[in-house]
Image (cartoon, rainbow, N blue to C red):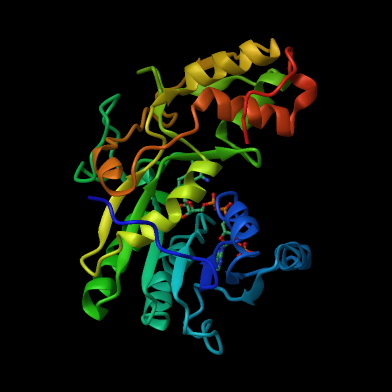
Length: 315
Ligand SMILES: NC(=O)c1ccc[n+]([C@@H]2O[C@H](COP(=O)([O-])OP(=O)(O)OC[C@H]3O[C@@H](n4cnc5c(N)ncnc54)[C@H](OP(=O)(O)O)[C@@H]3O)[C@@H](O)[C@H]2O)c1
């Protein structure tokens, strides 16, 4: 049976990548109830001010820098690694995403649990087949982000080595497509529809993914920490129900009257849907139906585009 979620209230927690799309809502939700430290390069003063205003302590660190963690506290209860860089420079990206993760784990090895956020971009393209955690790995996102999939695979490998070698309870969660009232892929598609920009899709449709709403991942993060093991737990992390780019664009069209123009391109990312069996066993199913999440996103970010007003979300 799945263990209960860890208690985060009052705990000293480190989150890397706090200004990112995925982590910032976590900072906003957790800073008021935890002792939260936020680590990034923070080259923009405005980012520091925004994250501090949410209530987190900012740590200015470049994870690619071998000396970057000097002076950083090392007594965290929980660590969540959400930082990622995709500069396109292999040396730098591997140093930050993989070596930097290894150093961070060593530095924080007294933590009760370490969560590394990976990506379904580590899987080799396999059409519409839902991919279990032992599916073949591949350089999935090469066309758009040359260093990304390789960095994420390298990071997972470093993560497993350090966890086993130094007995650090660790979870590796392979995230599908995050979205919410702060943005995400469906919102980019809406903007493309508004501007009449063609949406490139792989010719072998439907192009399935597992949209994961912010509210769902906020609920699941303490559960992912609870299943951490020094023989690291690797688990897919997405919405329980798959949907496709084609379906969510059609739904955006229903909401707004805007029409998507699809253009097939064999080089576009193809379908990348996950087998959620292990996820359900470990952390349970997700709750936000994707149509409800997308409607809420449009209401939050582009209410002027809605044809029919009126919310459906209960919270
Ligand atoms: N967004 C998605 O659709 C998606 C899908 C699947 C998986 N994921 C995974 O989810 C996680 C978060 O992704 P995201 O999209 O939220 O990322 P993002 O928006 O690109 O943000 C990246 C974060 O990492 C920090 N960062 C970058 N390079 C750094 C370095 N060298 N040292 C320290 N911090 C650094 C950035 O801040 P600074 O620039 O200030 O350093 C920023 O806070 C990643 O692990 C990603 O692989 C995301």
